Amino acid sequence: MKRVMVVTDFSATANAAVPFAYALVKEGGEVHLVHVIEHDDTLSPLYAHYTPDDLASPTKRAKVVADVEERLQALVPGHAEAAGVKTLVACVLYRVVADGIIEESARRKVDAIVIGSHGRRGLTHLLMGSVAEQVLRGAGLPILIIPQRH
Image (cartoon, rainbow, N blue to C red; front, side):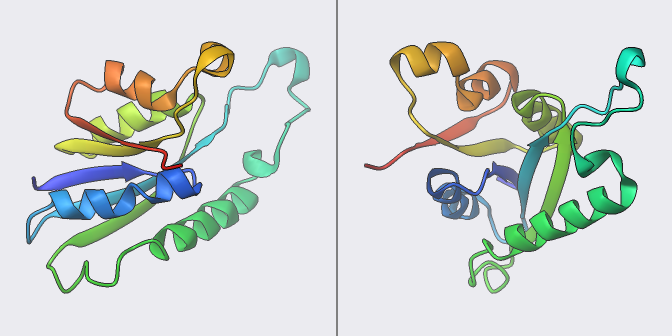
């Protein structure tokens, strides 16, 4: 594969998916290491004066993005550069995380997505759903789901 996107929420489960992405990419390929922040830029006319978080401020948003991209860079395996694999890190903001992953994969023209799964079951899965499952259903390209290790 030439381009693979791996997504992390910085949990141990999600970070465990990172080495798998590098294992899939051939020399000269790219790994897109991405973190999606759930954020809605749409302001309600009823509450136009109110913003629920600091991400509405361009200065604070830039700081958050820079901090996250620094954390992403720290996840890059030491052998990646020596193996001839280019890493692109990105922090992106989307209203819905799964939609953000799907849209970013299309925008970046990746060949596959690697994502960790927390393995929620039962009522928790029913109420919260699974980002990995939503991506699997909506991306239209190969998805490697790395399960949580107990």
